[in-house]
Picture: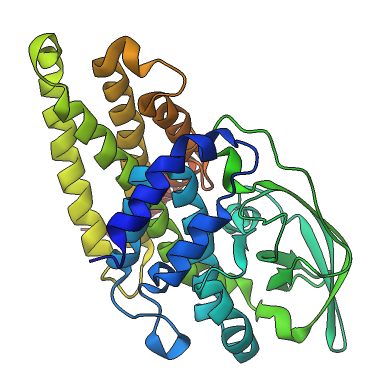
Length: 371
């Protein structure tokens, strides 16, 4: 049961369209403050670190509940919660003792600038940031074209990956007050305009070692990736549930011709919910489980897109009015397939792994190893 659930979700529903449109003078920060005050960021974070314990499924369900009402807030919730996960997984006691409590309360915005790093992990692109370790300091240079939950009026801390000339890759927490860190103007988006999404320029940003999350990105990133992806599933899960609920309300009369598609979508949702529940209990992911997790993320996202499309069909003209909730969800859900890792990136990786398996299987057959 989510603390103050009805109060918070009603608050979000009232503001969802304005946050999606980026209406002036309306900030997603007030929603994050409410979520932090109610302890929603602390699900599945150990009590010893200031969290409220519990299972990862509770965190996924919290993001899902918020996303049903407002995907803009759901996405920023995900940014905050994933940043919290990085700090919780770190061995850095300074970050855990001095920074984590404020992020858990929503007093400081936590941003994940690790989209580039996750692509790097999958061999999709090179790292965009360079690091130089000099004594007790680390200097960072480079440019990130996209990061979200970058509070332009208050304080934020962004997690990034940067590589030294020797090839060592660090995971760092960079505070907005660091000299040489420049936030751009808000990017103009199709939806989720109030998600505080912008560019970041790093010009000789110098930090002490207190801000190092991990010295070994190659070990750290795979350890947090399952949580990263499962929490993302909460975004698609929430908007799917909402759209199918709206479709169910309108199945009578002429719209009954869509009932088979609706019930098929419901069956798929039930299967995916069970998979999310199962994966949320796993403590580690081998290669096979990681593939299944990639497939889960693809399947729940595609179901979300299809469910909102079905809702739009069944609502007809009234759903096409710009300020209708259906029209808002159409713009919201368009973001999920491009959220890093995008569906194309995930499917390319699944295809690559499948091709590698076929090559290895063929080599084993030719060597007479397999029976």
